[in-house]
Image 1 (cartoon, helix red, strand yellow):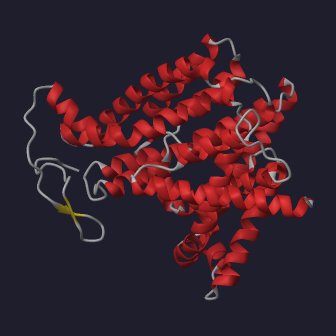
Image 2: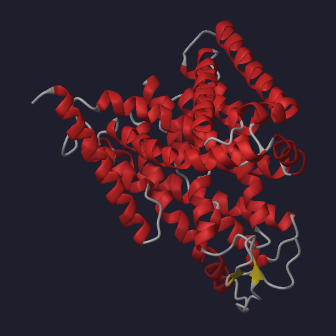
Length: 411
């Protein structure tokens, strides 16, 4: 068969399969991420239908997927949001990092993988899935709940921490010496700080330059600027993902809103391709040996995330029910855990790290929506408290929430 025809058949089959899997997940109201990972396992080496001609294109699409994921995340926040969250919620971010990164680092060291793998696995267990959690909050009607701002603040701090964490990981994975590695790290953090400063001070001018009433021109300018900055960031060892994230933060107002609506379908397409690509590089036979460590790590870090949300909500004055809801909602891991693990897989530092991360994410991306729904009633039952009936409150769009917080909660 002609190579171009085979490529079209292979890639078309992948996209069609992802679309059907996404519809299946939506019908049963859970995240499609585990299904995309399983599809990658099926199409990869050792799977049922290994790819041939389309794998290189999938690799490029996966890199674009990471860039678009971080760009869209950055579009959710303005520079003022960034500064405000850092000032008011930094203590919750520190508790979150300590409770959830340390178990990952400890597991890597216990498995004998070394300090670099420990730093990587710490990031995998630390970062919650913003995409999965945002969907769960909407599905459960909790966008207007009083604990929701606490949840979002923790997610914002985790996402912003990537601007510092990813350059560190990139420098460590490069395997350079102490002197050159330190120089690379300084350059990376300096570049990230410079872009962040430009975003804070000149974001409005950048948004005015990018903004256009023509959707086609807006799409081309935003996408081109993002890819350009991402490429330059990667050249400076900052990570393309961080560059894209900072571009998103720099855009605000009509430019950000227009770019968000135009790029959402592209983000969804290439993000799905990214998860498939990660699965392609994981041999299914390598998962069973790491399944028990992944399960143990999932149990421990589900508990530490619940503790994180409970502590942060208590500090914000939320009642006990809201604290348990906040903790249970933060359990899900997903896209960014895979992004971090993908860096290590590409660098080839530890063959078992990719399979462990895949199994870990598969477990928690399934458990996360369940813990968001059932942690509070289960905790209430176990602590012997009587479960009261909430008073419906209106969410941001004026819709009553059936799972509203109790009347005695304070913001």
